[in-house]
Length: 157
Image 1 (cartoon, helix red, strand yellow):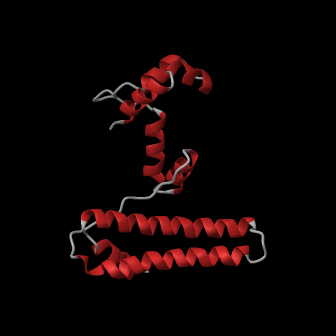
Image 2: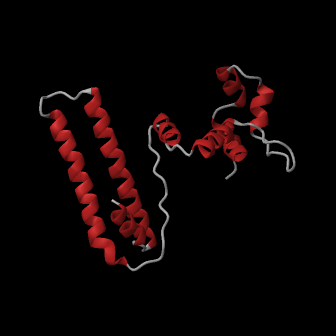
Image 3: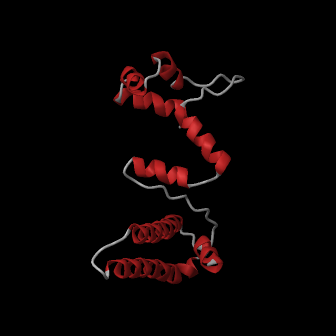
């Protein structure tokens, strides 16, 4: 789906007029965002395209993680998969269990004094993000019947 199509659907739930008022922008500018870009013209500069350009330029996934958090969710990159035999299924399952155990260890250590500091919370968040990433990779590989990426990822660690 193209960004202007996404925005068109958004305008069905939240009116362009209300959005323009909330953002203190002209209504015509907001409507322009929902138009397809001209084939030979410059991009429309809609906010979705700008965020995508920011990511393409920086390649920093923190932008996408932040955006996911703003929506009450999270961002996990889709794994690149290769066709492979599922010989690595059991070790991959063990890796998820180990990642979860590591997270629990970080939580237990942080909570040992019945309080969690800001630094400890950041460490817990980092382990949680790693667990989500490892698990998403595993699930995607399960869905495709392909475990080569899991083997490659484990070898890199």
